[in-house]
Length: 476
Ligand code: CTP
Image (tube, rainbow, N blue to C red; front, side, top):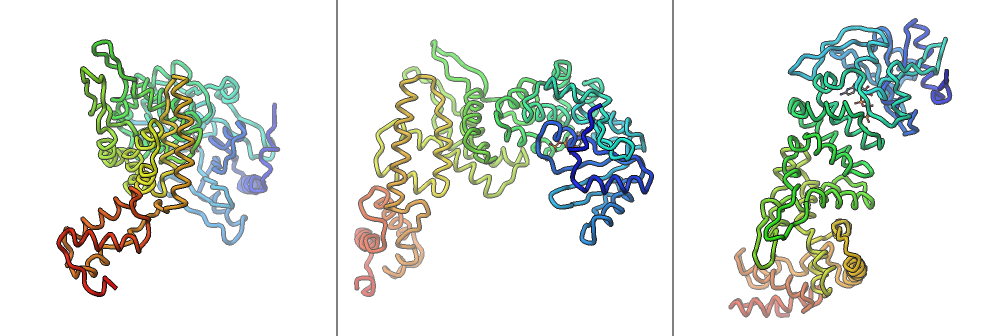
């Protein structure tokens, strides 16, 4: 039998083994850590199962590790956590579990290692390494986890219907592992997910979004999202995305399937960024296409204003999915609102003023906007591809040149509202806003340079046009 001693070289495993011997308690590393090291994926979360009290075991390990190592105890669950260097080590007594129909919370009793392995979700997650002196490093794999790794297959230990009905989060975990590891889901299991999809409703939104985000962060997220869609889970957890799917034909004119297009954009962007929020921007960039879709007998299908309506839909979608409602949401909103802007430039001739406007509105996020724009080009037409790619380079070059000259990314008005009020001896009023707008427009159009002197001069002349008199001080 293969021995995996070499994988368990870190001294912390010896120390746990010593503790096991002292307490005469059989002890094992189980679950995700075993799976990951066998797949050669780095892993810092270690789960230890001991045949006895997990918390007492953890206390003794912490003592051995030194004074400043603390134990966080979760008495209700009988588990304890030690943070040691980069490692998070969780200790638990071996358990047996059974589930009730309307809850994910199982009834728990003491059990053997086998009981503990039996209650786990997938074969790849049920393997253990022994930490006992007689067979330190040997693999205990009663459910064929190693074979599943070899076949690249996600397979449940028990009957899949029971596994998913007991704990419906496992349906998303199956799809998530298949996406992360590039495995397939065994076919009975896949069918059981489709059958039990509606049970996802008993899972908390926080757990769901955690899994969804992990799927979005995989190398080719379309794989996982397609599985979520096909099994019916996506329609329950994120119906706005499913509404993008399908093609309508009127008078022989079809529009593209916006679900497939969105997945393509997401895969494209994932080649250039691991940022979750930029990936979310790709998912949501066309989200308002279904509610803005119209058929015009002259021009065909249109989706006028989908970028603005899409930006308006973002907060509600974030709220429902329990995504953060902070700057990250604002960032995604901005990306959705502006996503057509660079594309318009790429398709047409590029003027300096259009570039200035893009820098002004995009600010520090303009580079991310360009990444989204590039990902959004999914045409199969080779001529168009070449034309867009050439123009794209031009836009990027121009953005750089204009930014170096005009510094519009972090634009601050060269004449503030306060300065305008002082110059004309005004209280806050609409004229202040009008003058500010005129100055901003003149800078963006290139009529004046982005500096205080020119802006001040324009302020005086604009004020006069509005019938305002500058104070003497302002004219010096
Ligand atoms: N587990 C399970 N059913 C769940 C969640 C977890 O059976 N719904 C089991 C699996 O054996 C898993 C172990 O508990 O390996 C630890 O779970 P967790 O730390 O959540 O996941 P990992 O499998 O370690 O994967 P990751 O760290 O990537 O989430």
